[in-house]
Image (cartoon, rainbow, N blue to C red; front, side):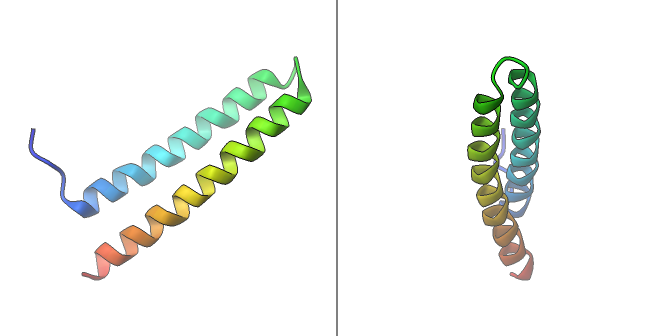
Length: 67
């Protein structure tokens, strides 16, 4: 299997981050009926990590696009 070019790899990582954020949102909604506090903590912590990852990959894609 040949490696992806850096731009394609960064785009794939960006999409995977978005999918991961969607899964975490679903899990928080699934947990919410049993423990609202736990659901809020899960949502806030993992979504803030997801936002940081998105910002990183967007910057990476912009930098690779300029090259």
